[in-house]
Image: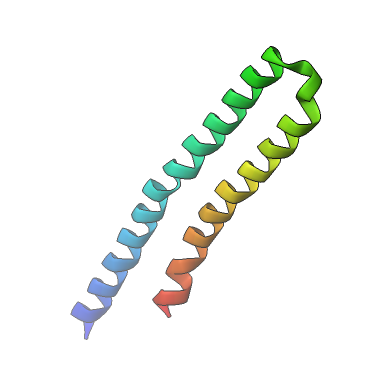
Length: 78
């Protein structure tokens, strides 16, 4: 019985490590979105409203992926 508990604890630890590694993707995506948005604003300041709207939309999609990744271990872990 204690062996099963140890294996379950190890799998939960691996899930935490996996989510930590998976969070790198949205972090890089957000950096790319805002980096390129800043360049676009510097090149065409008159399009600031459109660029900013697209930045916020891209940010929301990236963060949604991160939040889904955070919730999935709890859904499948039960």
